[in-house]
Image (cartoon, rainbow, N blue to C red; front, side, top):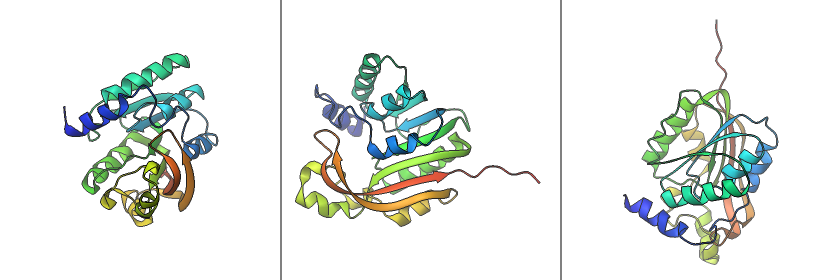
Length: 211
């Protein structure tokens, strides 16, 4: 088991759901605009977002490095009488059928830049033409918010945070439907509590055209 997996397993060992049981607000808002289909949650942790999507009628796949996170997500799924397909593994091993998903949701999934490139390429291949990426991520400015309130969470390494330009680079093949940097109030369990600076993004994979 990797050190990263150990770290996340240790965090999720708490009886409490450390990021809460309710979905991310931005994700909830965006899913309300869409008809349910097949959705993938890489880096899903304890399952709060996946369970919400399943309750809305989505066919949900979740993926994370943490076996403890999977266990808690599946426990939450039973409570709400829904099913999710949850796999455990390294983020670069997203092995699903090509063009399988209608939506991929990236909610506070922070990786090194070389890993982000691998992930964005994988997502592009896994999305159907016209498919959607929904993302909420801590911005580079968030470092200043952490100094004021450690409970707001997020990586302490600025190289793991995002700028508008980073999103444009990582999702260069997509049609940008929304891309903005915002100050928001987070209330997502013990580790995401307080004022934060985030990047919010919705992008659409272009529909294939024939000539």
